[in-house]
Length: 246
Image 1 (cartoon, rainbow, N blue to C red):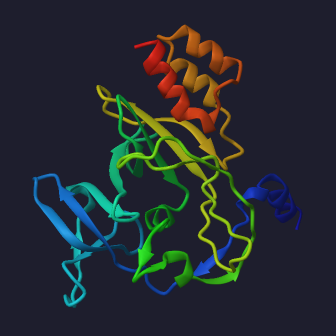
Image 2: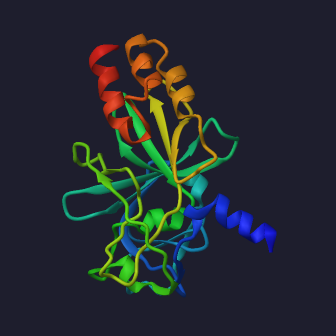
């Protein structure tokens, strides 16, 4: 009993909705393979982001399994004007590939990964004209309103979330993501660098990591050390670096 109480006190932000969905749905999108081939049709993630299924259309009965190591990138659509891009990338954390979403493509690009990457993949997704969240059956729900912080919104620049939890208190079902890890990568770098995390009370390395990454820009390092730039300000921090230190 003491262990349970300790866990609830230490990790209160990890109490989120449990959702019941028999099978993840197919959504419209495309897959670019490393050999240059492309597939356009319906995509779904079965058991994980590393278990990709594909059909050319709804009439195709048997789904195809696509090996994630053969995939260069996956794209899906927020709407007719905005596309989401997903990749399998190496990071500085370990030797394994991580499933990440591109937030901004630039000389220093921003990526994100979450504690549940299937939820990340289906976030902001329409299935047969309805939000994916509306297809979920809640067992119980714990609401923690988030704050949405927008940067410039272009074809390859997704909204940058101060909290990725999308909550509407008048809706009974929400899709919840308990943790988001943010990565950066310069064009000449091979691996993504974990620079910040939201929803992880054990991650305290943003200031140290960011100062080291931008050590060639003393004026930016000073502002990082003074906490003028924090995790939620990563896009602004990169813009400052491009304007003052390149």
